[in-house]
Image (cartoon, rainbow, N blue to C red; front, side):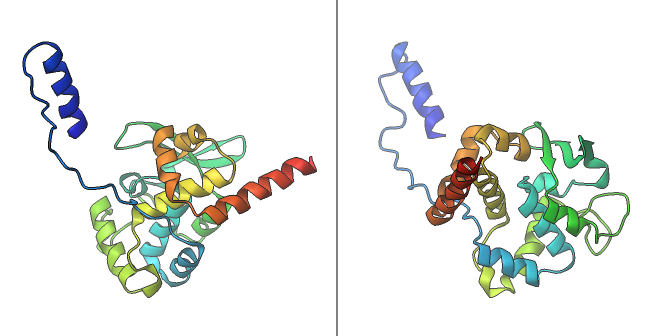
Length: 212
């Protein structure tokens, strides 16, 4: 909002409509750290203690990096196979962007244990599909019962997935095509990555390159 007002203010002053800067004196709160990525220990605790649909949702969030509004819409019919690799092919609900999100081996193995049926992977106890908000609400209840996960968010899993893809050597643009966000936003999501983990990943890539 401040950026819009500032631009409008400059436009109006240049054309002699006003001499006032509409944003003068506006103090905005300092930006926070945003949704923090989950640590390896927290991911392990979630994998060990979540059950049912909450575990299923956790795995989908963690291993796709998609927005919640897209995760709750995932169905078996969204799977596309190309050159022997399975992926979720869909148009994101928020940005209307086409994405091709590879199904990672860990997620593929987990999905083998799910019952085969039509419709969304995530269903409520009454058999109805989850909305993003309802899944987030029930997930928060399950999360709060696990002390190791206190204060964590589902959106933090999106950040975790993005960071893991970056550590695997993908470019910001490549990651954006997988999770459905712009390259600048991918870079933004990576800002809270742990420095030591980043360095370890960089060293792994360097060793592989030297071994070629």
